[in-house]
Length: 334
Image (cartoon, rainbow, N blue to C red; front, side):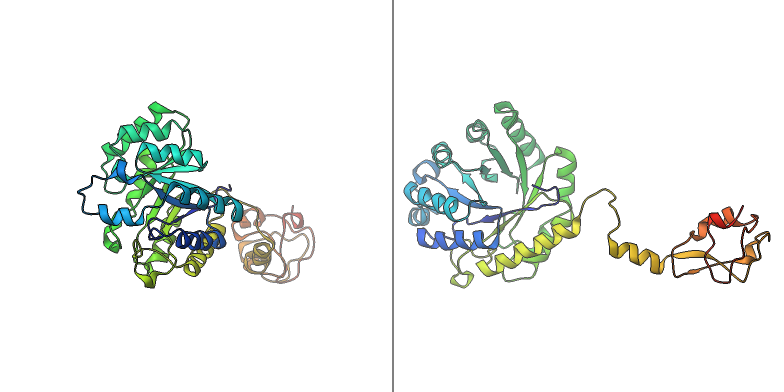
């Protein structure tokens, strides 16, 4: 993947509402938009949440079966082979299942940042870990990274930064903190955007993050935000997600690379037409000693010596007649 390519994750979350047909629509939206990855949230409810939890009934209703996830993964592989699958997992049985459908990477939710059992189990797979660090302390982040490296030194780790409120108030996002994370941990950092899907900030805040050097963007996608279903607040509709990807690719193209590169033809033409050169202020006779007053600094029909080369010319003898307003080069004097 090119250095200037921003990896875009389409986060399905629970927008599927427990309906695999809706999940298929979301996969199609992400795949047709050109997302680099689709993110599944895979869990086994009996292993994840106590029965008296306030969300237990809701989670029971929206839990997709292992067979559903298997078929959805097959749909991705069949229809969108260039789109990777990331599994956000919450307990060991789902890690094992995700491996059985050959996901490309794992996400560990910030809720499990202090869960060494899950972190070790995921790290031992050797697959990339997107470590969500929202609402976590620096010590918690450092400890979790240590657990990963202890289990598998070779496991790639990306830190995923994002404020865990849906939708996120703009003033709470704290984008500059990502720079601190990049410097402190020397790992790729991604931005999980949870801005209101109905607001322009859902586009221009991720754009700002790209400008700050994030390695990837995670953006929620749904089948229809007007449905106002689960996880709709920060999600984009499929056609909006397409526009989002187009925006990111324009930003990638504009970013270029962090080293000097040759001038493009248009820049060469600009230099020729706009950069100033040393020209004769009047006719200079052959054999004449050139003085400062003999020179002007103007745009010319061709690019000659720049003005800061005047000391090379002043005090030298003209080797030929030079007409007024013609450029003067080093070959014209001795």
